[in-house]
Length: 401
Image 1 (cartoon, rainbow, N blue to C red):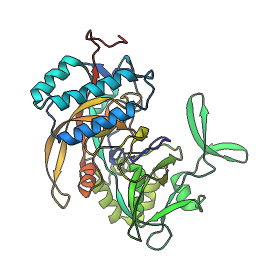
Image 2: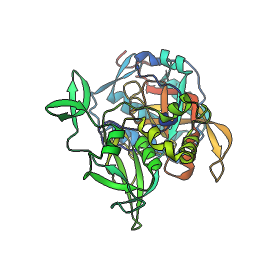
Image 3: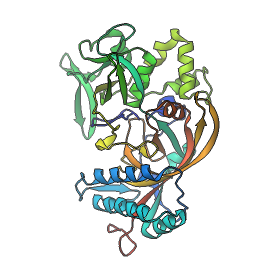
Image 4: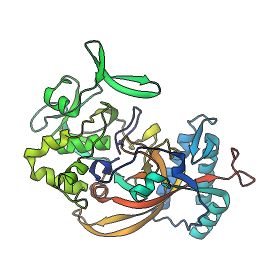
């Protein structure tokens, strides 16, 4: 999930996150506090995933928060919340999960000790049909450190001539040309004019896989000598993202239902003569660097947990919070074919972000790096609900109220 801002992130992760690339549902960029509102709903927190991954993800969240100054403050809906309160929220949550095994007892204690906020309740969510839940994964691809056919499709390092300027609080990315600051090269310009020759990091054997890696923001590369290395997001050219799934739907080449990752890949492979035009319709381009061995990492250098970590817009849903997600997910067979859909109800943790994730009505679930994760992510574009849990103070109100 997804194209990240400059940070030691993923996808890693990074990157929708995935399905924004594939989604033909319009996304809304306006972020308002009203997109998260307090709610008195009484939920039964039945978690459909294993206890081990739940505690692992929660403890990673606690580790992240201990790296953040405790007097930092974030917005949760209309409330300003200090990092210290988020720390206490996660620590109390871990204590409850460690002490209680009954969903009824867990639910009762969470209702008693936490305030509940519902995300995706603003005007943008209403116009989009509610919270949009997608999935993303870390791709595993074949690659080479040298341009030996068929490995001829480069991933580039962050170029030395790329400059980020702050214009009144709004960052702009570009380059200098004849003493003028101009937009950085587009995807089409980079791939046809080759202005970045000499800054290649490695080479892939498939332009479609390369584009998927750009959307994800990170991946694992199996090299020709049998070794494996991870790559992660290092930066972007600053151009706006355009969904090629949306393009194919608008042109009548795919229906909305067909505009999934498998559907888009099948179309591109069946129409190689149209491949470049379609890929170049998205001017955004991602640059990479070598990643660390081990866990996939998201924004804030948080190790991600498959099925538990989610990417969000941190300006609306803060990283470091505890959340509960309700949606549905595809059930696939060994060949990646859809068999049916089933409900998904579980605790998740905002630990990643992405350029395509905007507003409080969008959440992207990290699914891992397996082939099953890839197929599941490609199909997942569902409505859902996301609830944020914040610890009450001793008198039942937050300190900032």
